[in-house]
Amino acid sequence: MANNKREKLFTEFPEVSTEKWEEVITADLKGADYERKLVWRTGEGFNVRPYYRAENLADIAHLGVEAGEFPYVRGVRRDNRWCIHQTVEVACPATANAEALRLLDAGVDSLEFRMTRELTAAELDTLLAGIHLTAIELTLSGVKGAAHAELLLDKVEREGIAKDELRLNFCIDPLGNLALNGAFCSGNGEKCFERIAQIVRRVEEYKHIRVVTVSGNLFSDSGSTIVEELAFTLAAGHDYLVRLMEAGLSADQAARRLRFSFSVTSNYFMEMAKFRAARMLWANIVDSYKPECPCSAKMFVHAVTSAWNQSVYDPYVNMLRGTTEAMSASIAGVHSLEVRPFDDAYATPDEFSKRIARNVELLLKHEAHFDQVVDPAGGSYYIENLTQSIAAEAWKLFLEVEEKGGYTEAFKAGFIVERVDASAAAKDKNIATRRQIILGANQFPNFTEVADEKLAAEAVERKRPEGNVLKPYRGAMAFEKMRLETDRSGKTPKAFMLTCGSLAMARARAQFSCNFFACAGIRVQDNTFFKSVEEGVEAALASKAEIVVVCASDDDYAEAAPKVKELLAGRAILVVAGAPACTPELEAQGITNFINVKSNVLETLKSYLRELGI
Image 1 (spheres, rainbow, N blue to C red):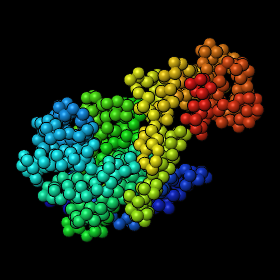
Image 2 (image 1 turned 90 degrees about the vertical axis):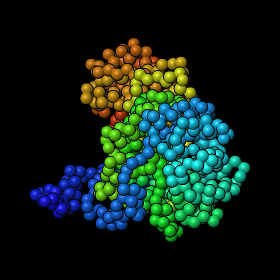
Image 3 (image 1 turned 45 degrees about the vertical axis):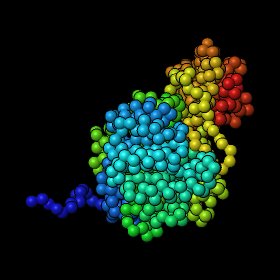
Image 4 (image 1 turned 120 degrees about the horizontal axis):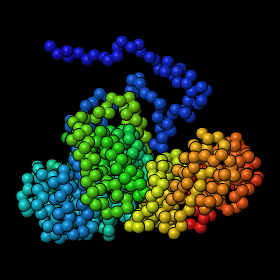
C-alpha cells in the first residue's frame, strides 16, 4: 500500500535556531558590520537578507493557494505551457509571409507581425496566405493598430473562422504612444479610447482576442527599476480598465481584453518574483470592481527579454543574457515569451540569430522540460519574500499614481518620467563605477575586438528626446560609444603594464588595469614581471605605448612611481594602479593619475582619450 503520509526530511538532524545561525555569522564576520556586509540594498526600495527561514513566511498572506486559484500568484492555469513568440517586420507582405511560414515550421506557435505601414485588405491576404489562423496565436503590432485590427476582423468574419478557436492579440496602446511621443495617437486625442471600446464590443463573442496591449516593457527599456515597471504598468492597465468602463463596458468585458507585455532583465530571482507579484496585484485590482466571472481577474502576460541589457560589443554574450532571462520568465509562468536575437541591438536579425533565440525556448521546453512543472519557485522562502516585497513596494507606488489622478494625469504631470529618469541615472552611475556589471562593456571586454565596419554609430548613440516622454536606451551605450570612437579614430592607443615590486600584487593590478583600459578600446600589453624599474621603463618606451601603468604593491609605490616618472620624462601618460597611502606624496611630485576599484571608469577613460586626442 502506498504511504499517503507526508514525511519530513532530515528528521535525524537537530534543529538549528535563527539565534544560533546569527551567532555563527557574527563570529565569522569578525567585527565587520552585518548590514553593510551581508544585506543587499536593492534599487527597488527594500533590503534582501542573506538568508530566509520558514519563520519568514509567517506574515505572507498569499501562501496556500494553488495555480489557477485567486489571486493567481502561482499562475493563471494549472499548466505551464507557454507560447514561443517571434516577430516579423512587415514592409513587403509577400516577404514577411515567406519568413512567417519558415518560423512556423521551426517551432514558433505565437507569431507577431509588426507593421511599418498601413496595409490594404489584399495585402493582408498576401501576408496571411498559407497561415491557418486557428492553429497559431497571431499578434498585430506597429502602425495603425486599430485599422489593422478591424481589417483582420473583417477577414475573419468574411471567412467564417470558428470564434472559439481564434487566438488574436492587437497591440493597440495609446498610453504607450503617450509615453514615447507625448500624445495618445495621431490627431484623434481621446477618441482612440472610444474606438477601442467599439472593437471590444465587436469581438464580444470571441473568447481569445485581446484588443489592448499594455506595454510595460517601455519602462524597463528606459531604465526603470522592476518595482517601477510593475507599478506603472498596473497603473496603465487600470487606466484602460476605467476608461473602457466609462465607455459603457463592464469590468469583465474590459479586463478580458487586456494583454500585458513585460521586459525580463537578468535580475534572475527578482524577475521571477515580479511576475508572481504582478498576477496577484492585478487580480486584486480587477476584483475590486466585482466582476461576474473570476477569470476576468487573470492577468494575460507576454514577456520579452531585455533590450536595455544587450550590448553591441562581445554580442554573443547576449545569447547568455537571453537564456537566463527566458528561464526567469518561464519558471515564473507567462502566456507567451519572446527571446530577442543576440544582434537585435545593432543589426536586422538574420536567420542564424533568430534561430538561436528560438532554440533557447525550444531547449527550455523539450530538453529542460520547464513547461512540465507549474511555479517551481513556489514555497521558496527567498522567492516568496521577494514576491511579497516587490508587491508591497509596487502597490505603494501604484497608489501614489492613483492619488495623482491615475496614470494619464500622473504621466502628464511628469511624475512617471521623472521617476524613471532618476532610476536610469542611478543605473548609469553604477555602470560607470562598475557597481553594476555589463560583461564585455564595462568589465572583462574582449581585448582584441574591433567594431565591424557595418556597425552604425546610431546603434550606440543614446537618443534624448525633448519633453515629457520616456527615453529607451541600452545600459552599455556610454561605454560602447566611447569604444567605437576609439575604433574609428584611425589611432591604436596602447597601455603598457609595468609590473614590478611584489609579484602577487603586480600581477593582480596588471589584470585589473588591462580590463580597465580595454573597456575604451585601448590596446593593452601585459607583462609578467620586471626585475627593476629601469628594465620596465626601457620595455615600455620600446613598445611606443602612450600610457604606462605602474603595477606594484602599495608599499612599493613610494619609491617606484617617482622613479618611473623620472625615467619616462613625459614621453607617456603615467598611471598608478591602486589607491596607496602615499598618494598625497606622489601627487606632490606631479603624479596625478590613479585607477582603482572606486574609480569612475567611464569618466576616467574619457579623460585619457581626450589627452590622446580621441
